[in-house]
Image (cartoon, rainbow, N blue to C red):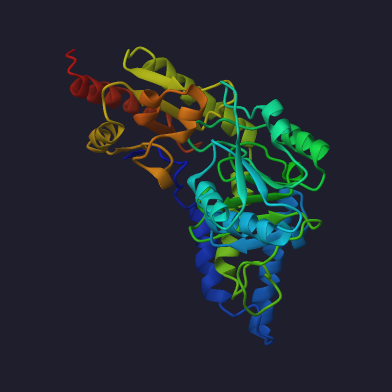
Length: 376
């Protein structure tokens, strides 16, 4: 098997899985319980939270556990909208976001909020001048992802924050950092709110984080008992939380070294695929190497994907949560519907081997020749 869909999800790290199993077995008490087992479990959860806070360089009180990035995005965007609606109802996002952001914005628009979409340049970066012009006194929120899930374009969040705060100091900046954390260095102090999930960093599915700066107020959109997790109430999933802590620690080791290795693999694939007339590389100078997007001329991406599957090669047609749809990100960057209608996303990891890449290139050639009617 050659797995090249790491941006959709990652295999759980064996050490993380072992942590999950041991925690489930030995710390099964409810951390809200007052007896010894509950207190023991709560202390372990607090230790995990402390480690996460140290890795992310934030306060422990700024961390809310969720079921994943989509859950976090909902709490963040809807929570800000509900708590700030008296100040204004204007929200800005980009055309390079995860589908969950668009779904939330569509909902907010349906209940009276105004959504503006900031332009981007030909390299995929947010157009600073357009952003500046869009910010108004009633702009309560801007949501810009740290790394685009389809093309890997990385946004300069620090610069974006400076522009926003200069125009309106009260405007909140949220970033979905799901494709950034564990791949490249990120700074949560560049934003007011950040979201990510464990299953993109070799952790378990079903656990994510919402980072909320202590100076930011959010109205809860979920209600329940317990004071440990006011924005997402309920019994904390301690085995998942402890596993997330372990996964985050392991994922942030040797980031630069891993990135350099992945860059070499990326360039090797790009070099091989540029020889095909019917292949377009959707990569800009701001794309991180972990994500490589291509477009196919006259071949359906889904057909190509399933043909590769026969060789046990696994890639995505675009972001996993929008498979089969037009790539909004490729369209936003290249303004070409044909190019955006048949895209493949090849996503790499430090676990990817050179041998796997060589085999992928060979299988790609066989599939391409077969589907495009070429002969050797």
